[in-house]
Image 1 (tube, each protein chain N blue to C red):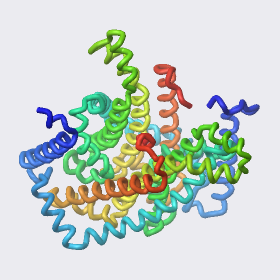
Image 2: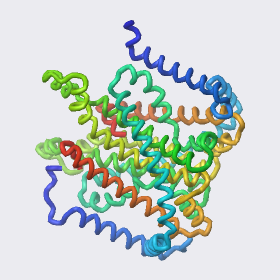
Image 3: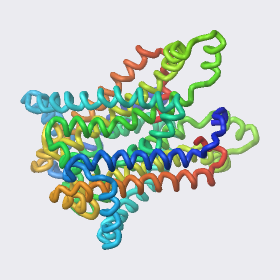
Image 4: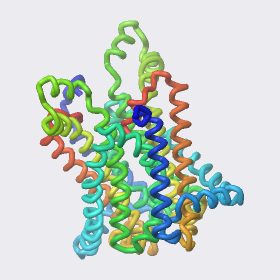
Length: 255
Length: 255
């Protein structure tokens, strides 16, 4: 925000300080309670290191990424064009909106038994769940964005003689891009969520298997290691998407 | 065919054709894979009449509401504080950003080790699922309050407390309400995640339904959950209009 005054201390220093202090509080607090209730960050760090050094977490994580990426790419490929159509075409909007809203209102996890019936317990089911959970989110966000394109943009384009394809490619696509990026960000959070849900609720696999094994040993360090891994992964992916967004649509950078 | 352009006609047409497609699909693949609406509706009536499902649902919703209200009580003040105080912002933002992308499902095995699978566990899952969305919405809303409004207050010599109560708080109502709506959606999702994992309440019923030969029972439960979600959202929209008549729908599109 332009009105915020410039700080002497850069923001990331403050954030780093907050994280360090927070980790210290967690460490001290966790030392007071039994390890099987909650592990301190030092233990989690060791777990993470061992997991990566032994390759156990790397293999599990790579396995998780397989269905995450496949499901998410499919969801983007279907969700973005369909969202654009539903948002821009009045007939399509009123025809499909009640059904979309209805499906959107069902907690996605309730589809788990269905996914098992249709796709079994393994890879296909995991891909399907990731697809379903991110697809609906992308569809809703993109269609809301496409509906909200300022009529004045289109009027100006028309006044300058842009028609059909031109108006579509030069005006509507750029206008809807910010929403596509928002949709990608929200969709990806949902996709990661679906990824771990699938691994815990279907036949346990990959990171979900690591978590279930750790839970059986009451190994809270091992559990938190996976949680931290997922959280950091989520943050990095968000940040990468933000950077791409800043490059692709520099005119629309909020913070 | 002017009437065909009417949005209510189109909506009705959309719902009717969705139901028809569903029924046709159901008849083609059989009720073991997908029961059509003609099978689901009687099943739903029976579920309601039987009394077990409404009882389980009421129990689930009670716990969900407790977790959700706690999340609102904590999330809203924290979000407002972060939005208006640079210190709170700096301290809490990295943690909130990290936790909001953390899937609550990935915390479920850990939470079970920590607090067991009882009442507290389910309330806690709902709380964690919704609180960070409530915080972030309140934060973004209060941070974006037009500084001129605060300036007007200062011109009229309003004290800090008065500025807060009379200007900042009313200006943030729309965002608090939006946050409450997003939070409620997440709370209901969290509720089903928790229950499907430990097999109690309506989530437990969903799991059992997944084992039946016919999917009619499962779909009836999903329709119930959908109705719960839609009702809850509409109720909060109504509250929003009553509490803050200046609450506009466009704020709600941030979801």
